[in-house]
Image 1 (spheres, one colour):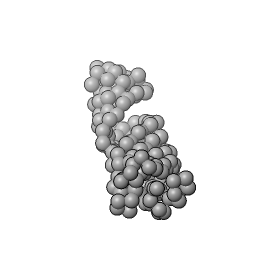
Image 2 (tube, helix red, strand yellow):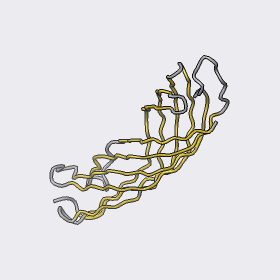
Image 3 (cartoon, rainbow, N blue to C red):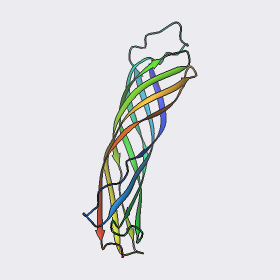
Image 4 (cartoon, one colour):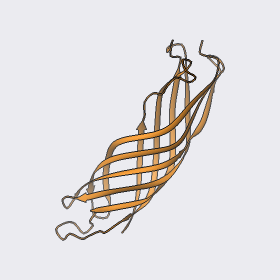
Length: 178
């Protein structure tokens, strides 16, 4: 009843508020995560009409991996005058739970959610426009996703889509862009 997983997750949470107010607008927050984990399938009631591997049932497990962030800030009054970028990396670890329905011998649908610590704390300094520092700090990420997958028997190949929430704090020090 134990399964292993590897997945790549891309999250774009859009722009953030100006930091400090009116000085620098954060134009994008993007995160790429590579997660590896193990799950335990509860119940696993066999259904004779399906393939030898039955993915139906609830599962819970642990995930961990790496994360990369891409953040960009600009002058909210004159966005073409200067841009500061921040590309950081860190680690993620947490838990996952979900439920799958094995509909036909090969097709599986499901829903899952996860909550993980997201350890990115990075600052970038831009000396070219004017001395400035853009900081990004995250503490957690959560997702709720739907799944559609193809069962090859022992492996489930799937796509997910849904919503993501990230706790992110931006900071800015220095003079505004000139």
